Length: 223
Image (cartoon, rainbow, N blue to C red):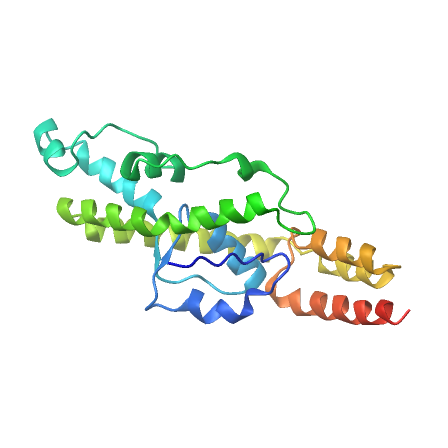
């Protein structure tokens, strides 16, 4: 399937909010904690209907430990314990070496590099066959309910922790708005706005930041 890479530091993801919150459409996310927390903090929504291979494999490994080597071999031929990371699962289940060189690159720069775009697209594309493989094993082991419960528990815990953090910590929107208003040229404005995307700006104040940015950009463009 065709892959789309959305840079949420530059393009507002408002148009996909209905997709994120849909209970009918499955969202495949590896290690849901970051994405769920980010969505609540910056978009003001909770991602619904998540399938997380990492948490699924934690349940799979838990089940495999109760089985004989012969039973395990019948379900997963040649099985060897492996990491539950995306790279670990990709290699174990799909025999694909997933490059991770771009993971620690600078994602706050003005625009994404080709390498970063390809990295993001690969991470997304590989989820489809990875989830299919994972689900087939979960089904054979008969642990669908356990996996669903584990993923829901992880998601609910993330929601609870994030909401608690938001209630106990003020965001940086006031400082960012002030800095945007003082920007003396478009280049400085863009740098401030982009840098501000990694700050704890909660959804309730995001519109104010965007409006300030747009007004200042319009004013500077006239000079």
